[in-house]
Amino acid sequence: MRILVLNCGSSSVKSALVDSATGRRLFAARVEEIGRSSCRLHVGDAATPLGAETSFEAAVRRVIAEWRATRTPADAVAHRVVHGGARLVEPTPIDDATLRIIEELSPLAPLHNPPAAAAIRIARRELAELPHVAVFDTAFHAGLPARAREYALPRELARRRGIRRYGFHGTNHAYVTAAVAAHLGAEPQALRIISCHLGNGASVTAVEYGRSVETSMGMTPMEGLVMGSRAGDVDPGVLLQLLESNEFDAAGLGELLNERSGLVGLTGTNDMREIERRAAEGEDACRLAITLYAHRVRKYIGAYAAVMGGVDVIAFTGGIGENSPLIRHRCAQRLEFLGALLDEDANRDVGPGSAEPVAVISDERSRARLLVVRADEESAIARETARRLAAPPDAGGELRIPVAVSGRHAHLSQATVERLFGPGYALQAQKPLSQKGQFAARETVSLIGPRGRIDGVRLLGPPRERDQVEISRTDEFTLGVDAPVRLSGDLHDSPGITVEGPLGPLTLRSGLISARRHIHMSPRDAERFGVRDHDTVHVRIDSAGRNLTFDDVVVRVSPEFTLEIHLDTDEANAAGIERGDRGELIEHGEVRARVSRSGPR
Image (cartoon, rainbow, N blue to C red; front, side, top):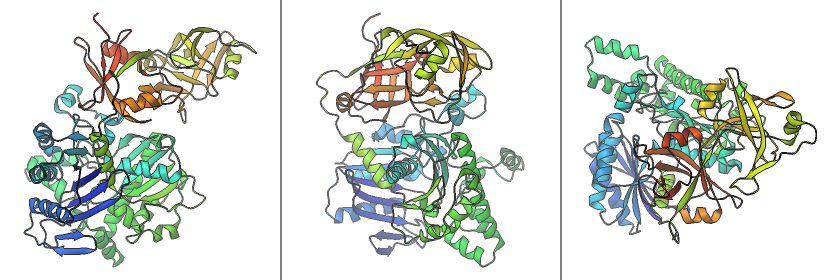
């Protein structure tokens, strides 16, 4: 598909016509510095002055006119929107209701959602013959774990007001994740990546095995790093004091934190190139700004490495991250304890003139890779839009997915089985399981944690190469342990647990997880459903009085798999799932899959 992408910032409009299959740009234009005397239109290598009188609406119309002049057709229009809230977590066809939600979320992204909404209104009028789709910066972070998502505020207040961490720059963080994995010849699910999006807006995201698990921006884009005009992290007591002083009301405080703080507040400009030049000339304010900026980034890198139990890649992206060797140098200082060693020569070689999509700036001895990734949000937005609009293959019948409830269980190696049950012991099959070649064994073990024990935990066979024990959140509290949410087989840096069999207890050093909800599919099933391996979908449970939507359900595809959704007992109990329930795919609704009842109760 040929997708016309409109990527609206707070003072810019970027446009590109992208072939979604190849990522090739068939047209590109941008208007920068809107509202300033330096406002210019860029098409190719040509720059046309537009002047301070150019409005945002005029800029949108101008880039559309420039595209029309090429006479290159488009199949759809994609709009980048910063804040989608809790409801808009997937690429979404735009109608009046969707536009209203985007506008209602403007107070949470006051510099970005209003321009995006304005661009959507104009583009829908100018290009009414084309479908329009919104792609949201918050979507990549929709599956944040609760410990990263929630604030320590009264729960009723937080839920009533929708107060939670949403995260931003998700489109680019997702693009960086895919680009890094492709560059290294690895799957995203094998990497721990810290993605540093450094520009006028800036954020850091911890991507653990393909999933955003922490991010520096919060309910709004104001939290976290020092930015062009935003302060980032500030003691809330300072804000209360400013309000109590009567020098600021709420609107004035918002204007202070969004438009007059950050680099602008420290130096009078948000242009890092100018700040670096003035710092080199000895200006103390600019030297302090660079130090503050880099210190905050480095602090988040260290924190996110701790969150993930290590880091494999630290990637720099965004206007400053891609173009400033000095800032990358400052951010990478003192990271040797993480195994991250900067190659100063390679770092200096990557600047404004560099065209490499991914450049290595780490020393060859570095355990953690340091990379620079050229942002290409437009290509990522085009791909997501094309996938959203592409009609799924003919299903040849109703698309229904059986639901399996997985209780606590253990997969043990043969060596561990023998240590618990005796030399040469073989597990005895009690009944076959739905997945090919697997069975529930007659044997059970006990799990022993710091706080308590659970007896009668079923072993599943055949034995595996590595020990894996799967428990629910309720089991965690019973045992007094903290099990990471992981896909089966993802045991890196997982904690251990004591397992007791007939021959006594044995402490496993690793292997304890809480299973991430997932769907098993064969390649043929995946083709019918129009999904791919490691896609994330949403599953809605329709039950009398207990309707529930499960986010972050991972698709697993293998020729060995039988179609089935796997939920643990906590999730099944919350939704009132009963034996025989099945899932049904929604092709073009807000949620991509739902669980429906198989018949009357």
